[in-house]
Length: 323
Image 1 (cartoon, one colour):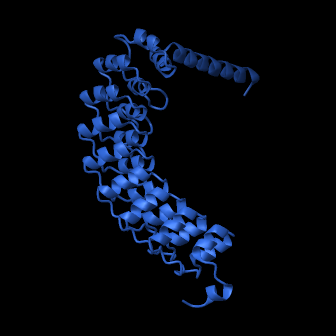
Image 2 (cartoon, helix red, strand yellow; image 1 turned 90 degrees about the vertical axis):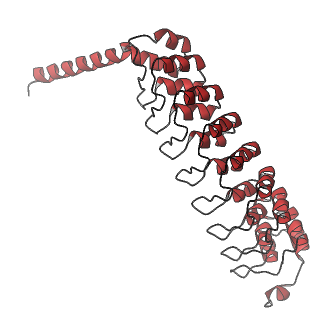
Image 3 (cartoon, helix red, strand yellow; image 1 turned 30 degrees about the vertical axis):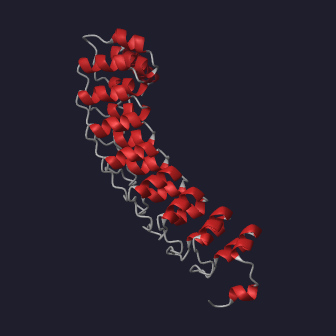
């Protein structure tokens, strides 16, 4: 191939690229999408006209309606809906406009979308619904709206953590209460068989733990490793949650698959107040886990003198004698 031919091919390719880029630059739909993503709603409003593709998308599939719903641009949302925007369109990761509104707590926009036919139980690529997203982010007004409009409180995404689990983990007791009032499964478990109560206990969300127990959560369910809510509370030092669980008849001497008791968990983590609480509730310090260690042994490994005093300083000979 001669140099002239190569140069001609390069010139033609460059010309095609310039034409393509120029077309993108002057494409009115591209301009309005860019304005929406930059938050220039005045420009978006001026640009919406009879020739506007109301369902134009960005490269990731996001529509104007999704962008406006996410940013709380209520006036633009109304204009787009009146212009025939697809209320249930989803982008490349499955997110819809109602999910965008839910994520940001825009209750008025969520209502507008629902009134125009938004699917409140649509799921994104990970299985999240608008309700799950709103519950995780603490947007109670949106949660209540979605529940009133028949959102399913028991849909769970791939990881098994539905709306109730996410609200409980983050300590949103008011949302937990709303979800339970709409028949959310109180003892629902994730892929590792961990209950909502366990998730709240390990995070020290005392108010949520008490609420769940008051509403009938079972305190002695064990996960796939045999760990109970009280064990999680003991390991994390969540004293308030541990008290509530003990008052609800949680077994203070339950053993995990490894033979670990709540007291051993507490001793291993050096949680002095929890050790006191468990001992006063009848926890047996002589129980050994599968490795043969007691709570005292765990405290000794950590050189935790206050814990050793609580658990009873025994001589090595005494500790090694069979029970």
